[in-house]
Image: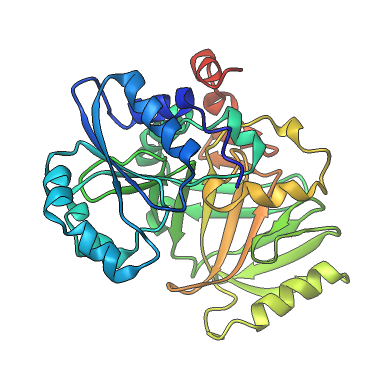
Length: 340
């Protein structure tokens, strides 16, 4: 996997955002599949901050061995002193976290990615700024509106929403933050939701890694998709996706939405049908895009991403036509941090 874009400078910036200082002690978890370059860049990034750190190989592909090593006296002692744990393996399971000293640490899990825009938007400084800005707005917000020029129109009461931020920075003991990441999740009681979702060419069906080619309208009544309008393969794909979900009662029910907080230049894409767009969803949801999610509490029956939505908190504009509104745009310090 190509990881050269994870430079010591970028890693050092992210570690600093996670609270690492000259007086910190950091534990780095690695395994035999982590490349020497990735490990060396991480070490260099920590050295730039002048902190103390130790590297432990936990051999993730052997479950019993991994658990034994996580519970070893040396590692337990290191974890008890660590201000931050950096996981380069991307292999820690819930069982490993629950049955080791890790559940008392702040953990940063670094996921390597070949998606090039993130080489200039990796650190979470801007993500934190936008997340904090939104958390400041929400207590004084009554309704959140998702709409578009194409006809999407959804309005959520803030009283029916629960929300959380994923910024790539672990805030407290027991937190595992994945990086790069940048989005907010909103779970909703949608029983009274009425409206329409209009998918336009260039929007994304996440589950199928598919770019929409023809307009499709999803009519929402009582929080459920009641009709899919469109005579195209896109409409048929959406119907097949929903019909294949085993929980028929909740397959068509909207359960929430996610909004992207991560900045990179939209001009990276060659056009609405650039296949690289499907890499800019899920945990690395591009800022200005909104994902609408259907299904039950356990699994998604359907996730679709609007790439040109407006997102409005009462009268405060957050997204406009798939980009950040003025209050969310990166400032000169964020751009400088990204080398732009």
